[in-house]
Image (cartoon, rainbow, N blue to C red):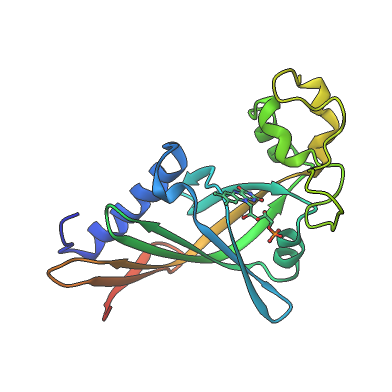
Length: 199
Ligand SMILES: Cc1cc2nc3c(=O)[nH]c(=O)nc-3n(C[C@H](O)[C@H](O)[C@H](O)COP(=O)(O)O)c2cc1C
């Protein structure tokens, strides 16, 4: 990727890449690291970026509501999401707060778009992170990805949650052989303020 000459170009490229991460299956921005705070320890894991809404500065992820990350984000909604694009040499750190949407019209409207076989991640009989004696993932006996129907997955909806991250600050680092470039962007309530940073 060419070096940036304007802060606005870097901001627009970043949001374009966040948008493409959610829409292109093999895009490197599709699987960022999502961090949270577990009591006073940092915690982090990979997630799939499902939707980017540039106008509202929102990034959407799906999860099982029983997973530890949900409790951590309920206790402290502050998060940093880290993206890395190895071809474009761009790292983005996106800071914001995460709301958990479940058991409401919004969550249901998304659940309805998920193919039954892809609802497996919310179908475990035991909660994620439960300790077990076997490596099985404890799906109900009727759960077979080749034959499962929407009706079979009705009760799995109670485990489904959408994580909605609203981004307040972006730290973007562009690695470039002629000189690395770094900038910070923060939302001032109306638009993005920005500054270059020493990389
Ligand atoms: C490539 C990849 C994508 C993943 N996507 C998700 C996801 O979208 N949602 C999710 O809850 N877990 C996802 N996981 C699993 C999480 O990284 C994590 O192991 C799991 O959610 C348990 O996290 P927790 O114990 O911190 O709640 C993904 C893992 C990998 C390796």
